[in-house]
Image (tube, rainbow, N blue to C red; front, side, top):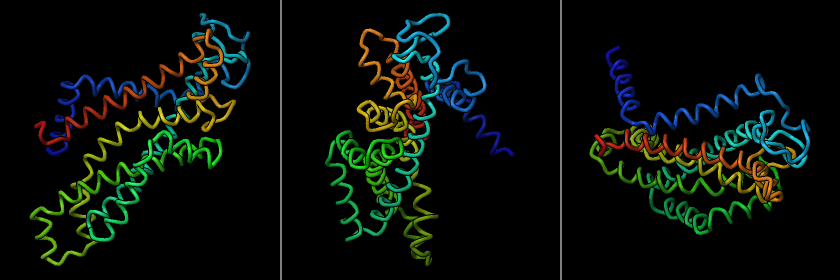
Length: 280
């Protein structure tokens, strides 16, 4: 019981001393609540024409209407479902694949390390945006294919990060003691090494959510992600680019991407400060 109380007090202290963490949690929490509840309280349908096309912002339509007369505010709020879902899938899959590859490479070394790390190096040799565009173009347009393309780009980052952590932990005395005690390779990796190697990965994954949202929106902007009439932020900005003087079409989704990215970055920075032992 005292451990739970102590942990709670520790996190409350961090919330009090780190306003950036509070701001990040509020921003991300707001968008999560919107994604889960928007069907209950929204006024307009994001796919239906509700007013005159290219109508400027007003009391009835806070962010105006697009080229088809759909409410931009409603479409922006619905768009968070696409961005949160693709970012969650991409980050989780990338962490799992990359961490597995990096852990195996760092633990076994030798030819296993050489083969796996050369694969990582080849992938990282390409600019992320160009590689994601090439993969998405080869698979065809669509949100699912865009997610696969971003996963292909993102997993090597976690592989290299996890490999470095495993190499650092595996040289410690308690690992040698466990190995001398007869612990199997599987037990060494899962019970003694990985639990001490996750902190940088968790921090990096939290901060990568915002970058994944931006990359997925970029693919949709050039037509390789979500397809019309889906209210996806990148596709909405692309619509706004073709109607330059109707600035409100791109303003809503652009600010949404900015807010969500900042929220995840605030949380990631705070977690790095909290979990990094050098900060204590």
